[in-house]
Amino acid sequence: MSDRRFYVIGAAGQLGNHLIETADGRPVTALTSADIDLTDESSVWSALAEVRRGDVIVNAAAYTAVDAAESDARTAFAVNADGPRSLAVVANERGARLIHVSTDYVFAQPVRDVAGEPRPYEPTDPTGSPATVYGASKLAGELSVRDADPSVIVVRTSWVFTGRRGSADFVATMARLEAERETLQVVDDQVGSPTYARDLALGLWELADAVDGPSLRDGALLHACNAGSTTWNGLARAVFAELGSDPERVQPCTTDQFPRPAPRPGYSVLSSESWAAAGLTPLRSWRDALHAAMTARSGDDHPLR
Image (cartoon, rainbow, N blue to C red; front, side, top):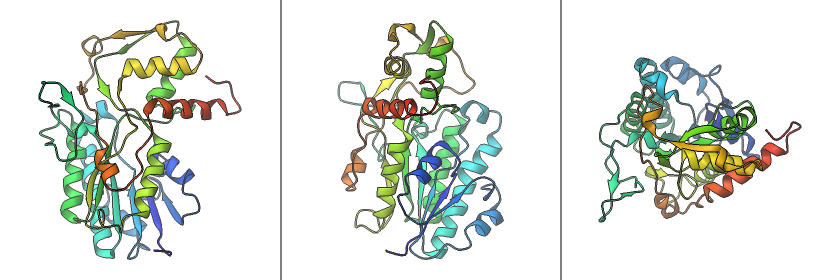
C-alpha cells in the first residue's frame, strides 16, 4: 500500500530509537511517552486520531524494569497489558495493523527434546505461568491484543542490546565496566539469544511492509532474535574481546550468587523458524551482530569504551 503510514510507539526507547533511525524514508509518526500515555485509554485514542485503514502501528513500548515490576505490578500490567489492548482496539476499529513486541519471559518452564535437554522455544509451545510479574504482564499483553484484534502480529524477542554509550543495556554496561574494573563476575548459568536492537528494527520494518502477505494477513505469533545462543558470561566475554581486552577478566558465577527480586530464566532461547517460515529474512548470528554494534560504537567521536 503506497500511502501506508507507520506509527512507532515507544520511539525514545532502545528499540524505538533504532526503528526511527532505520525507517528509510517511510512516513513515520514517532510517539514517545510524552506523546502517548499507554495507561490512559483516552490518550491512546487521541495520539492515534489520524490512524486510518492500512496503516501499521508498531508497539515498541514496554515496562521492562524486571526487578521493579515485582513491587509495582499495577504499573507493569497497565503498560504491558492494558495499554497494548487499547492499541489493538484502535487498530481494529480503524482497519490498521498492530505489531506488538513481546519477550522470552512469557515462558515458564523449558521445553525439552527427546534426550531431556532444553530446546529453543517455538511460538506454539505452552507458556505456562511466568515466574515474574514482568513476564506475566507481557503474556497478559499478548493475550489481550489478540483478543481485541485477531489480526495483530505478536513478535517475541530476547536479550535486546544496543551497546551505545549512555545506554543501560547489558552490552553497554559491560563496555563501561571493562574500563572501570580489573575483573568482574557475570552469571554463566542463564542461556539466551542476544538480539541487536538495530537488527530487530530492520526485521520489524520488513515485517511491517509485508503485513498483507498470505502468511500474515490474519495475524501471527512469531519469534525474532539474532541466531545462536550464549550465556550472560559468554556475551560479556565477547564484549571484552571486541574491545581488545582479555576475556578471562570476566569470571563465571552462578545465579544463586547474585539473587535478584525477580527470578531469571535459566534457559530462554527462542527459535526463529517461525520468522523464516513467514517469508522474513532471518537475523544474523548474535556474534556478528555484536561486532556490528561495537564497530558502530567505535565510530563515535569518543573513545571506544
